Picture: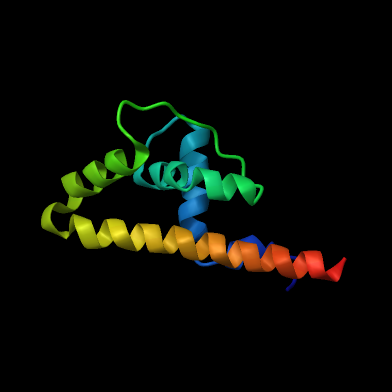
Length: 103
């Protein structure tokens, strides 16, 4: 694969990259909130995601952000974000499982 990191090929990688960059800058964005929602699973997979205390649960904060931007379309977009981060985590689990089998 010409030296490319396999994680860059995973579905949803752009959301993870953007979310990590936003968190590094201390920015609470849709992408960073999505990572905070998925933090327990992603942390188990070796991705360091700093915790950010908020007044509401991360899921609620993310939904409110999406709703402010999209109005009535918020529900389906919010669900698509959750599906994309789940796809990313599932694909990363598969990659790690394959890598573990090679050792």
